[in-house]
Image 1 (cartoon, rainbow, N blue to C red):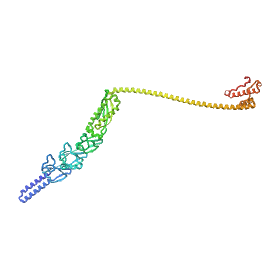
Image 2 (tube, helix red, strand yellow):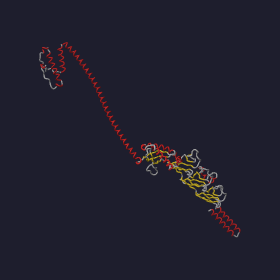
Image 3 (tube, rainbow, N blue to C red):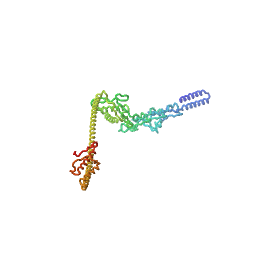
Image 4 (tube, rainbow, N blue to C red):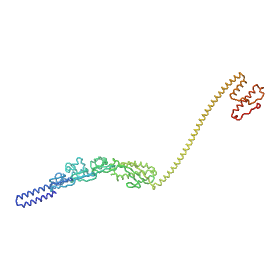
Length: 528
């Protein structure tokens, strides 16, 4: 447009001059020439006006001037070539088309999920061994995008910059800054990011593996879950999962599983073993895993497979097949301890080692059948021993019960003996007491009888005593016994006495149980 205005101005002025030459009057010719000059000046002045849109940036390219210094691309002191200063939105004057070319380009917009990687085309050469220029601080970032400041006071370096453009709109000199859009670094949940920094000072000479944050190398401290605006070329981020994972070694494997582990025991049996390994990578161990194997995918799988198979094979060499089958838990614990020690070296934490199926019918069928038969025999022997123990216990129980019964009987007999002895003592005491009473009574009666006899005579006393007894005993004295004889010759009262005694005896016989139904017949004295 500016060049068109200049051409139109020149053509218009030339046409006016040609027309002025044809005029005869000198005054008119002079006026026409002055008008032609004014027209050209007006067109020439308007051709220097340039407009830059609101969403555009203008770059001035100078066509006349001194040459740029050797190796320079952007002019900062009016040299010929692209100028460092850019044109903002609006009208700009005195930029004549022959002297200056104006190139416009749209401003750069970075979306929310993007980051802009900056590479500069001019500036100081990067120091030897440095791949990226150091980051500019947040307060200085605006100055960095000022091409004139960057190339002069800022002492900016040419080449890849560690600084990045975050989401937003940017107006800068596209001749100096080239921007590549890339996705932001998004560290998801249950993962961490391990940074391999290509910028910064090198770590201490003694630490060649992990370095502190800000130094060049693999950082000791991982990045926690977050959305980060990093220069993915200056800071290479490896995402490591911290979830607990399981790797299976099984015969009928599916996608993502490994083949079973084949072991050989000391007695020459070869058989497969199904194994399940549960492991995790702790956040603080993630940098170590990256430094040792690169990532938590194929590199880690290769190292783990090698360690797991070697440990299980080595452990099996020291035991017999039957012991291996029977001591599964011991093999699990032993393998777990060894695998933990081995994998800890690369930053992997092993939590569980579980052995599934051991062998199959083809490899261990005969051995297992022999063991089954042996076990059945052992169980039968154990059953027989249990039965023997039960019989012995029953026998012991019976003996104990018998002893208890005998002890009970013995105790009962002992008590009965004691009772009998006590009853005996009681009866003796009672008998002694009764005898003593009878004795005392008899002695008293004898004494009384003696006194009576002394007064009335023994015969009369005997008769009186006899009558007393008859009265106390309720004896019927009606004579049922007849006494015949020469009693007078033997004494005056012997016959009567004999008759009374017979009557008393008869009455006493009537009171005995055997004489209740039958009464004795009267007897005569001749029966004597």
